[in-house]
Length: 153
Image (tube, rainbow, N blue to C red; front, top):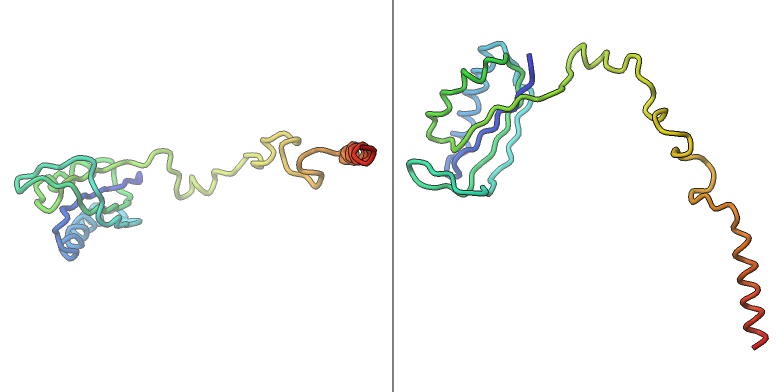
């Protein structure tokens, strides 16, 4: 099952209990379809870039929730009941791309080189001088000459 993020933008005046009831309803729907709710985040109140027009007015801020879940690909069609939800401004379901999990994730490192071997030896840090300047003694001779010239004046 692929990994999805369900973003819910809730109207700002909706109480936290009502938001949690909505999230629990979506979570129960995921579980009924043999899915797994892996993560849930609340981003709190956010300012919107433009006003979202609804029947009861235009909203310039909302509460953003993110639910990460593993569900079947046809789950998107089953969430259309959220369109009729009066507490929501917007909702969006986004699929994670190139996500490896389970046995695919564990066997991912087989046959790969070490990350440092991809860089040439000259680019990696060694115990030598960092700036690569090995001739520090040349500067002392110039300084001594300048000092000698000043004393002659």
